[in-house]
Picture 1 (tube, one colour):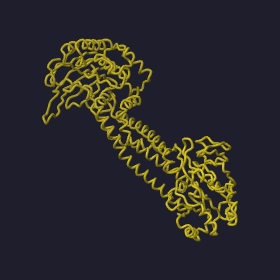
Picture 2 (picture 1 turned 135 degrees about the vertical axis):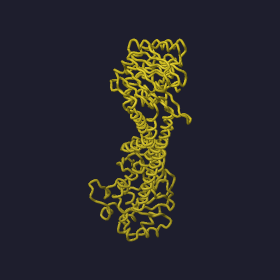
Picture 3 (picture 1 turned 90 degrees about the vertical axis):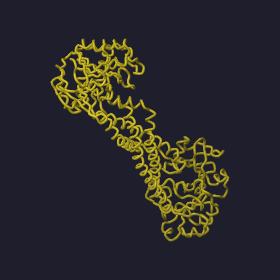
Picture 4 (picture 1 turned 60 degrees about the horizontal axis):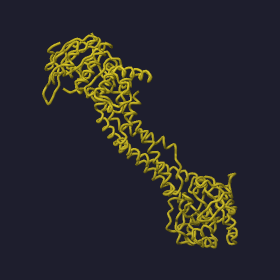
Length: 223
Length: 406
């Protein structure tokens, strides 16, 4: 078991009214699972993902990662946790415009102590994995949306994380490119045994998951 | 790829913003370096010469400016050369040597030079009246001037004073100051064309650190002829005995020459020290201004940079950059800005001082490498100070600003 979520809740104030984004949620995820999280807008999908990454503080319950409790950890511990164990794939790709494809992939290693040679070697291996070895020195503006997302996926893998958190990774892509990206994520899940948690609106993308969580008004409807 | 590379790549990305961010700090540093370069050279000139000058008197036209002793005669109005005879014939006690001179700025090739006409000793001794009055260097040696130097010439250690008692200077000969000899690549025995006439370089004068380094000395008669100012001089330098000055020599000279300005070098140097002090104070004022304006300018630039890069910083935080690393990134950027501002400011300030120094202050200004350390220290300090708050706010940016909002 890689993640254990126990009775978590998250509430906040919005325009003077209290909002319960997550309402007493519990579930467990095993290593190598490909979990999709679906639900309507405002159902709490992204809040759940942010909570699992330690990016927002929950207001109740506990989150364990590899038997370590992360919901009450300090900023330094959480930064270290994300650096070592978590890779992120975002809908907007979030590539740095002034870095080349190779530099973007190496970005998480900027705070790592490994040698420059080793960093480049790892980035080259991943750029081959995502099939963009002929775009190494291209800047994001010179790449298509699908290529940018592939670079973002390679970046998520550079620290060899045990968990990838993906937030609508196909949200900005057309159906053909979406299939490419989903196949790539599935391949990574199968070959590298990386656990993937993916938030999606797309029913097609949701079908790639080995487990599916469906949220409604902050509660799990099905798992 | 490490943090330094990352900051450097981002740094290069915003060149136009960098220029506006750096403007205040660069200009401030440039002004400080410019003023300090000029005032340090000026202070050195005063320090080097003050001890050797002793009691000395300068007779100048009434309307001349005496803020800078070494440049007081340059482009000054003229007085009749006949005044020299008037002083000599008055038989005033304590007047040991007279040195009339005519000075004007001119150009040789592209270089600005100060052309000064002087009378050599053999010219002075040829006048029986002057001989009778004992107006020779040897007399001076016995009376007032320092005598303990092995390199002295007629009792004068100072190069500037030595040339007052030049033994002989032919009509076609010239003495060349050190700086101008370097600029025009002149050597002893060489020749130079001045105002259409050829002169032989009889001597290159050692470096003095004053405007004399930019002077070319020719015979007074020749200068009057070439400059078309016959029988006129810019100034008369008088070596007077200290005791005589105390006994009212200045007052007696003023009685003889009522339409002139007569002052001691001590008074002029004192004015110059006051000017230097004022320049130091101006530097201090600029330092305070730069700390405020430069700091605010850098802070404003950094704050805009932080706001513009909120998503990027959020992404850094998301992939594991701690708050401390985000602070370090912005402080490193401030450090780079400081280095750039300090170097550019130093270069501009030095260029301005070297270019404007001879025009405004009347003496050559050489670059002062030790000021680069001061420039860097101020610039980096101000830059880091201005960045502290934006860096702190950057560290507080939430890491999930890239995530889809629900």
